[in-house]
Length: 220
Image 1 (cartoon, rainbow, N blue to C red):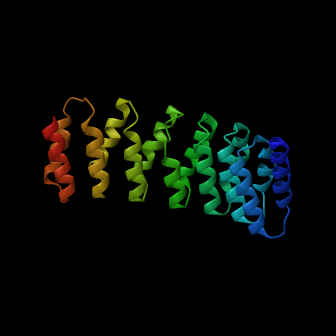
Image 2: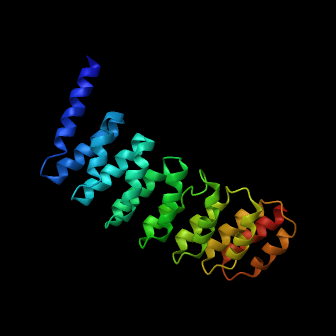
Image 3: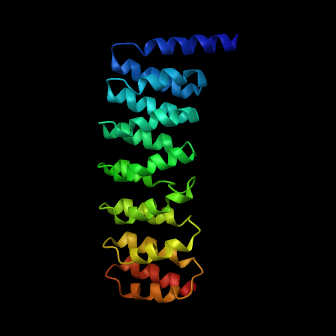
């Protein structure tokens, strides 16, 4: 009985996807996502093409909740959506797929014109596809300081000597938080000469950076 009720509920929500009011379509898409039922996959993919950006955004989020790898290609196709909110939802959905194709596609969003989309693309960039390290390092040159900060934080989880050079460069970033985060990430790595890299920060113009450098040097 419970299963029949569930089927009727799903069928009813799918029927609502054709409502002329976009608010009703959004509500139906969100409800389908909350059900996390694979039978909603095809209807949700169809809604990625909806005329209303709010519906497309909700569909991307819903497909991300399904965690169905069949959604990777339809989601990738929406990375070129004309609405930044949709692209942001797509990047988050792809990031949750934990699949190499999805990770590579999300990395491409680091070139997006929207700051929030680029910031989302930095998140866990190398968790699935270690080959994307260069993309993450490239984010250290982003024009937005917040994204550079995120990139530094993500590099903390990368166990490779290849990050030492980029992180050392980040010690000279114009943003004090980037410098401070870079000092913290570098400090726990067992690399010869690390103290020499951190010592110049004792004369930094920012008090927080100086304090961080002093603390990390004292721990050495």
